[in-house]
Image (tube, rainbow, N blue to C red; front, side):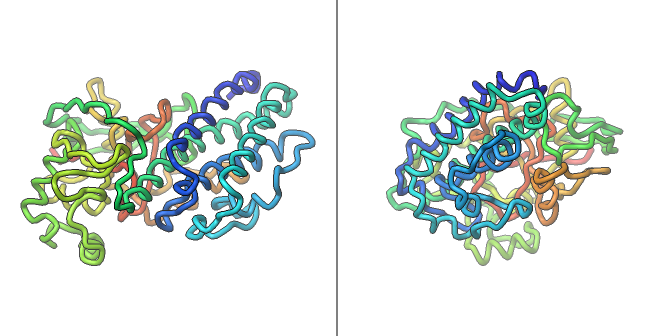
Length: 394
């Protein structure tokens, strides 16, 4: 973001911050304090952590004379930035009944006022230094907007009353045509092309060699995954990776997360009948890989996915439906170097033991998706809006 446009960012900043509040608004104060599991965070914590990010990385270093709203909050709402001090343990975020939700909202409002003042009055040097951090903070908050929804959904799914986060019915789903899209393979460029924002893990852009392949024209559907279940998919160890079969046994998996008896599934709009033509959601990597084995196919690599999404006529449902598991480990690209300073802790140190997902989901904020985006989660994760697309060799 050029420094000259920093003041124009004030309106965008306000929009992003307001959208986070709108997502949280249907949740009660009690809803916003509780943590569904160690991998999730309370809504209240998301509201405070994204605020701390702007305070710690924009206002503190770049706004002359800025004093933290409450110095104690740094310990509570720092996520994993070792260089910025100690942190409250992640699995215990749901124990933070204090500060209250009202106090967290007051914290947000105070930091927003300070950010607005800084954005419209920063001198040239301060603007130049702060601009990339402001952009990173906005992109970071958009990531937490999706996490806020997935974490709240995991919490509400545990309630026997099956409370809906959103009122009414979801938009009607428009089915996509089945089939395959072919790619000739060869040497292709992957990674961020330098236009607009990207996280450090999307670079450097480099070339990879692909063998000819086909990729599913659309995502795997609820109806197709039900056929896998009906054919004993969760009872046939030959279909599963060893760690995945162990999860089936220890966790008692019999279907995707939030699927319930009677052909219904729990989602943002509560319990609703499953649409057989809609993409299956809330799959682990293990379930996606087992389904692909059953279907006589495989999961695409992240580079096959990116190359197919770049075709003149790309596959359908690349974005806005479900994050799509790939067969690629979350590894650094050739010549990868983390960003300097605290931002160097953003992605690089997590590049082990995780798999890449591509695309975006129904919970991804508008404008936050791109072909080079690399999401990543451990292979057993199911609480995200994660689905799958098949691939096969030519």
